[in-house]
Image 1 (tube, rainbow, N blue to C red):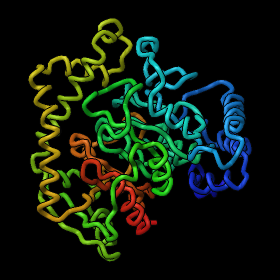
Image 2 (image 1 turned 120 degrees about the vertical axis):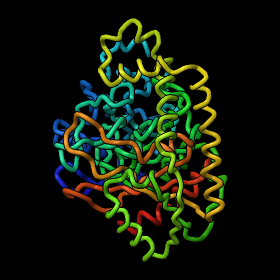
Image 3 (image 1 turned 60 degrees about the horizontal axis):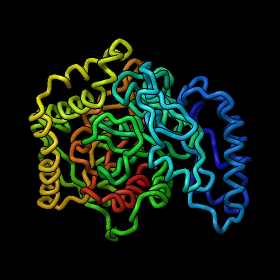
Image 4 (image 1 turned 60 degrees about the vertical axis):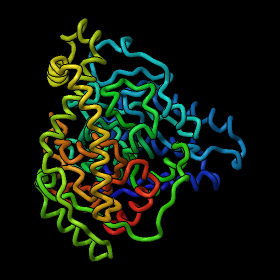
Length: 435
């Protein structure tokens, strides 16, 4: 298992390296024994996974069954033996879905999520369910940041980000309705990828907002993320990637001013300019408050609709912040919801037009306002992620150095809708500048 310890709860785990090792004869069972030892060392402190009795007995049997199904190396699927964490709002056969809540789980039981089935068919082994905030909103679980245990790992995909950073999974599933993939990835110093809206099926998860829920992924580096994308995203290689450095647009104005670490961001910008990247500053999103209100109204109204029957019967079991958003969503008129849904498309075109007018290939901005805040009672501010999620654009964050207290900083890269292939390929070069 290709690992090298760097910090107490941070450990390198390369999907690409381990897939190659398994092609050369490494047994998935041997890898699982290494994982079992790693779990014993760190998971009690980290709490990134939902508790499971006999996890490793089950995982050994799963690995043996995988080998039995694919005995010949030539016929093995592309993610054969990959260690997978599944955010606990995705349904997965054999695992209860608790969604981070005390609300009875039988209310939202359903068939296995399409993306979980796809990853299993590609050869991934489920390590377990990863901790989520309640119904993927702001009420956190027990997970801690593996860089500093008294800081949040972000949310709502808290356990997925922490598990990958700590070397407990090669890849983990997350969702993003505002900033729940990109922010925790940045806080935990790894790569997070939110595909274009609808590019990956959201069927089979506990829905937050049908108009904003994006299925996303966590890996330790962009090469691993590309391996995952190539394996499970339909028509992945159908586009083209220009053989040049992308022109990077910095979204100046009120949006960017939401970051409290702009000195660090400007240092990152200078580093990219020194590496040969063209930077173009574009004034955009000066109406960020109205965009945020539009998105918030939309997701609150859709959450209230999704939970209408459950909340009517079990409102006392919802935690305060979740209940407050549902109650707010109940006040949103239907015509306001429809306006917000329509706004997503016009807003996307507005961003595309700005890219065309200014010759921008990728937007470049902080992945979070600053490093992970201290404490685990909140998950941080998704303000830097919201507009890109509202527009449904593909986004990736790459680690880009350290900020206050030696905690990771992430850079957020955003492409045109359906520009996912170019986004990840270009992200490899930007990742290399900061490696």
